[in-house]
Image (cartoon, rainbow over all chains, first blue to last red; front, top):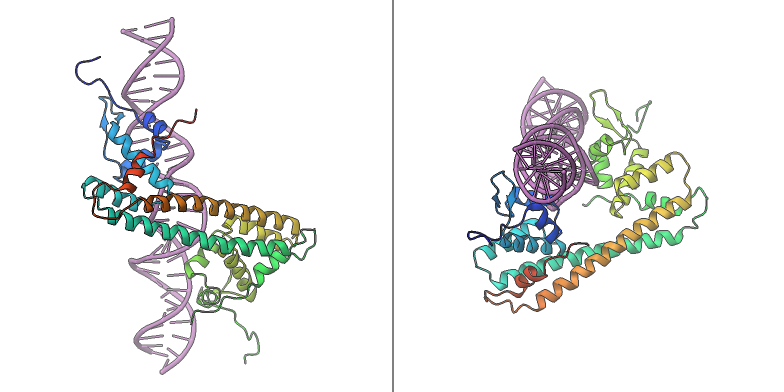
Length: 145
Length: 145
DNA sequence: CTGGAATCTGTAGTGGCTACAGATGCAAGG
DNA sequence: CCTTGCATCTGTAGCCACTACAGATTCCAG
C-alpha cells in the first residue's frame, strides 16, 4: 500500500463499464458540462473519483427514466447546491410523468389506428391495398381556421 | 376563365395550408427526393399539381402514424411502381405496430417507476429527497459478463 | 408602378449521442 | 530497456427529421 494515495481512481473505460455509459458519451457529458472535468494522469488520460462514478450513475438512471439532459442538469444543480427541495424535485418528476403519460396516450391512438388499418387488409397480392388507400384517403387536412 | 390552363396549380404556401405540412419541410422532402421536383413559374416559384398534393397528404398521414421517412419511401416506391403487394404493406404495418407497442410497453415501465418514486416523496422542504436518493442508489449497473 | 407579402437558396442549429481518423499513452512480457 | 498492442486522446462529421434564420428575388393587388 502506497503511503500517499492508494486508490488512483478509475480510467474512462472503467467507469464506462461500471455505469454502462458509453465512453464517447462520457466525454460528451464532460463537454456539455454535465460531468465536471476529471483529473488527468501525467500523460493526459482522464482519472475519475468515486464521486464522479456516483454522479454518472445518477445521470444514467435519470436518462433511463427518460429525463432530458436539461432536466438532469437542473436536478444535479439542486444536488450540488445542497438546496434540494423535495417539493421542486417532486414537481419535476410529476411533470415528467405527465409527459410520459401523454406519450403513452398518443402512441395508443396510433396503435389502434394501425390495428384498424391492418385488420382491413386481406394481405393478399391484390393491387388495391386498403392500407395504402386509407393513407391516401384520410382526407386532406382542413386548415385550422 | 383563361383558354389555356385554367388551374395553375398550387404554390408552396397553398399545399402547406392544405396538408398542414410546413413550407420548410416540403422543401426538405424535395431535397431528400421524397417529393418529386415540382414545376416552376417563369420566376422560379414552385408550382404543385393535385398529384403532388395527394402524395404530400400521404406522407403527412404516414408521419402522423409514426412511420419513418425511409418506411414511407418504401411505401411510396411500391405505389409508384404500381407493384403494391398488399402482403408487403401489411408486413410493414405490422412491424411498425410492433415498434409502437414496444414503445408503449417501455414507457409504461417508466411510468410506474416514476409513479413509485413520486409516491415515496413527502414533497416537503426536507433536504433528504427520496427521489434524488433513489436516482443515486439504483445501484451501480453490473457489467454484462 | 409600387409596396408588402410570399417565396427563393443556402447554411446552421436542434437533441443526444455515435463513429470515425490519426495521434498518443500505458502496462505487461521478453 | 524495449516492444507490442490495447486504451485513450482530440477533433470533426454524421445520424434523424426537421426548424430557423439571412439576404435576395418574385408575385400580385391596389
